[in-house]
Image (cartoon, rainbow, N blue to C red; front, top):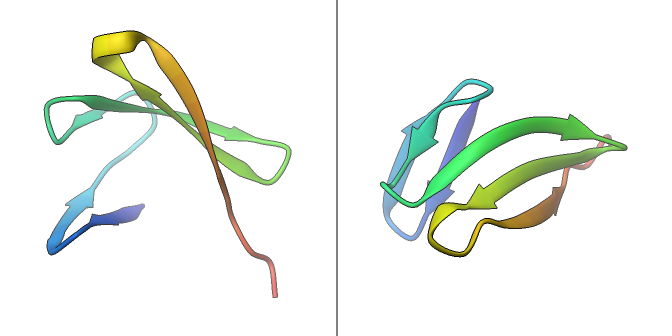
Length: 50
């Protein structure tokens, strides 16, 4: 999977850490689940299906 933050892009798989601060947990109910590691905070990123 490819993720973009600003001008940086990351090729990541489930469980991988990227940008030194985030881990891709996987998919849940049509959302990417990303953990912000410094605060151990889960973030949901909606993924479109159109």
